[in-house]
Amino acid sequence: MNSLPPSPLPLATLVLGGARSGKSAYAESLFGGQSALYLATGQALDGEMAERIDHHRRRRGSGWSTLEEPLDLADTLDNVMRPDRPVLVDCLTMWLSNLMQAGRDIDHSVERLCEVLTNPAGPVVLVSNEVGMGLVPETRLGRQFRDHQGRVNQRVAAISRRVVFVAAGLPLVLKDIS
Image 1 (spheres, rainbow, N blue to C red):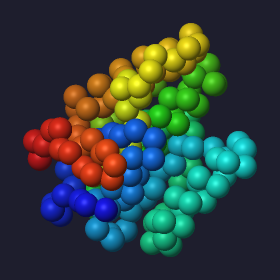
Image 2: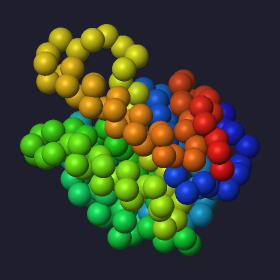
Image 3: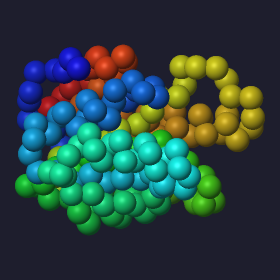
Image 4: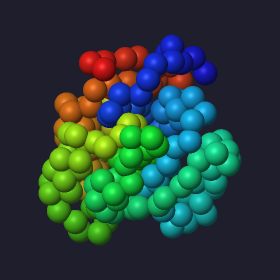
């Protein structure tokens, strides 16, 4: 995969892309082999999702510590961030899906995440799907999800120091103020 020249991680980086765009692999490559914490939001609720999670674990290798948190992302992130250990959050899309399924207050949850990301205790890279470039979902729930995801991405991008869009495994820097 092509990647950008190595540079120090800014305090907050958002990596966006479509499904199977290479965004997670690109985000992992930003850590350059240093010890990092993988904060996973996905849940293995079925066999297909379990296979996806296993694929991500195998690709990362054993050098990563993993913590699973499907709902309380902001508080967990706030508690685990340190200057000497960067964190990869994968992914905001699964987190939003979990929030919606659990009937959580999405605006409050996103606000809390943005509070944490405004002054993070250490570098954090967040992965999220860009879902607004395709067809309009047929169902009301699908449209609500797409709209919420677009707003989540906008809010996190606004406070991130670097934003990268990945398509076909190729990164395109949208913002870099590090």
